[in-house]
Image 1: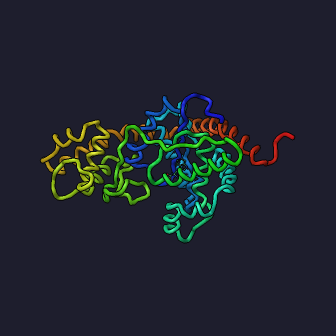
Image 2 (image 1 turned 90 degrees about the vertical axis):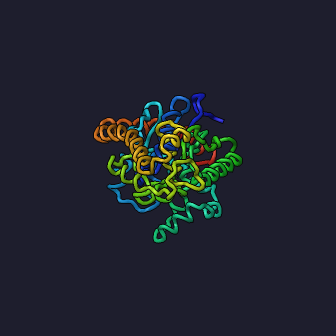
Image 3 (image 1 turned 60 degrees about the horizontal axis):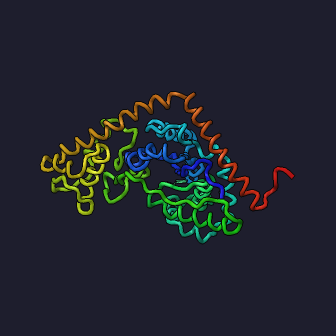
Length: 337
Ligand code: TRP
């Protein structure tokens, strides 16, 4: 089986360009991506083709794509060490997705919980793309012979489908695709919603439930002050019984490196106001420099143009190799007779 050219393992991740990337995305994903860039061969795809499975305003979507790329760069990801690109600019994603559609069963896709959720939310637009969404995701991953895919639990079922379809194809045609595994980061805390701390912080939930990476300091402070806690007024880590306070402790710990014990020792008994202000200070201290960098990058069209083009170009080179193999195996028309 053809492996990645380098000895390094390859990591692939896709990010939807919709909604505001959150503090949870930063702590749980972006910040860790930076730590992977020397040890792994990483591709980060801004998945604009996935985004149009639900209606988007075209001008907004285009802006959101650039915003997402700029946030990635502003968080410190090196566009030379990593391949950062827009999915739709590498045509092979759509082509492989079509081919894999022909190796995926209706029954498998009907079982996807995200499809069930999204078709309920968008009952007026249950389109074929929404149904086949997981096949496009499988194509994203298999196209690059990816070894590892960092995903949260919500994407586990999709990764499982990707493995099934890849294995099915390999069984029919001989080894073609590397079968990927999920990647669980060594460091990384799961950050929960500020309003419903039993739920993961999500950029598709209402504004007040998350801190956006681009939220200004006064907004950050306001949101954290309003975060749900409890009436015990104790700063002690107990996610099961006191999810709100524990989530704020996780945020503080993730951003400052302090242990839960150290945080409890410092803030327990001093009231939630003092504690929440400390959390807000820590969040602002981390996000403000990223925001400054973001402002600089988003204004630098020449730089973005160059990152975008070289990302698509480098991704295409890898993708083309896989597609040549796939086309041949399936029996599609040859380029040279
Ligand atoms: N479905 C993923 C999400 O909503 C995004 C995604 C698209 C993805 N393609 C991918 C994630 C490939 C990992 C690998 O979060």
